[in-house]
Image (cartoon, rainbow, N blue to C red):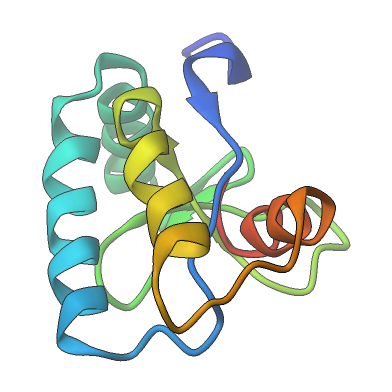
Length: 115
C-alpha cells in the first residue's frame, strides 16, 4: 500500500466550458505528465490493479485520467502533477475567453475540477 501523500500534487482547474481543441490537447498533455509523476503513477497502478477500478478516493475518468473524489464531493477532480500546475493556472486564468475573475474566484474555479 502507498502512503497517502497529497504534498506531491496540487489543486488546480480548467473552466467548466473547456471543450475546445486546445482543451483536448491540454488534457492529452496532462495525461502524459501524470504518467511521468512517480507518486501519481503509483496511485494509478493501485487504481488499475484494483478489482473495482478505484483505490482509496482515486479512480480514472472516461478519458483515462487519474481523478480524486472525496466522499461527499459532487464531481471527480483530475489529479495534476506539480509540474503541470502552471499550465492549469494559465488555462484557467490566462485564456482570452476566461476574463479576469480575480484570485479568489480563479482559485475556486480551479479547485472544482482539479486536485
